[in-house]
Image (tube, rainbow, N blue to C red; front, side, top):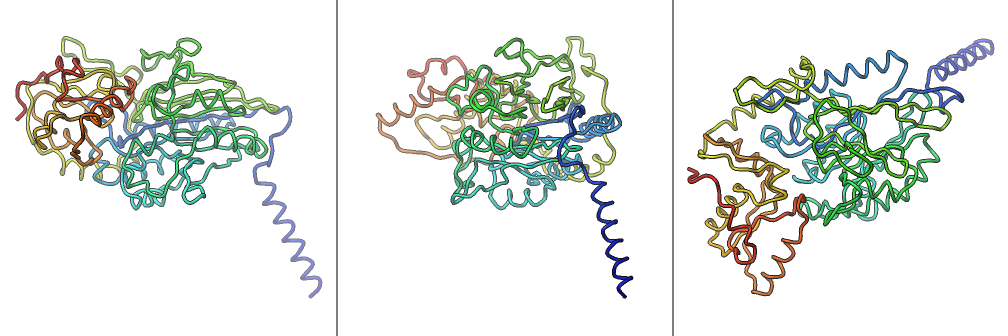
Length: 478
């Protein structure tokens, strides 16, 4: 019996040692170069399916991600896929189905982590809880608290062949004023920069590489105006971050020169990411239009960027005057069949519910993000006029961040309308004194052009002459 027991124990020890030897090392080896690729997206906003021009969509994204992962692994490297938040809100097919197809698509894509965006709070806490349960990857945010405790995991640690990588999640503290406060009751959004300053030194003791996955915004040279500070300001204030994978401002963080954003970036062209205080800052525009790819080498404590690219997902060149079909900037990407099979039922259900004609317009009504947040447009004025007529108010105001899409000339469907205002907001009327009106309007017009708080106003033309010049281009909207 003693012999059997001895043999059993020896066999158990041998098996345990064999199992341990198959695990990744707990620290990087000296004088060894590790190839690490960080893939990233942000501000998905419900775009699980390609648009009507065949651009982006999760099926083509999976083709790209799978190919890069296979390439990196074949060369002996490691990869992580991260997202900068705002999975929710923007496309009616997704909104009607609580972004279930989007999170299931992210699971199939194999995301390693995402940060919590402000639009994750567009709907009820019950829906967010469902999404957290559905996601097989962590939703991270270090600066959202409930009753003094973090409401989400602050960070996630990964072991890539012995290189320990920490991914820290951070969410803009503008969130409470950007969304419905009823959906954020009991939550406290602390300064993400203060939380990063506290956590990064701790993470540097546990990890060889520290990455922040943020939903704070990339503001060139830190010029954030009336909005909360973003990635540039954080990188300048907090030493020790190797990389910031950002979101929220929905622009490619490609630089023309130091602190000068390339606002005319062309898909498929080289992209030089921002760098502040030794920290690289990247952002992949919006909607899955790109997959960002950052190839690094880690060696003896140094984490060096070797190559960076924004990979367009079937983005097409503008239409030409002769009416020829639009062509892609780069080689067309095939859609992954497995992803298509997963998402097709959700797309079919959405189309059945949404493609119902509700009206028509004789001209395009402009709601493009990069116009409506900087200048008065005919669509913003039209919405305000409709609010005045519906409520019989003296004047109406809408923030441009609540206008998310243009309306086309010609027939307008229920889907088109929901794309313009996808948030399910409630129209509210108030009785104000003259002094209160003046204070309110002064606050409204103080919002920085380009920000979602930029106001469209109807009914106070003497106070804002610009409104007089911007009547709807359409003579009639039936």
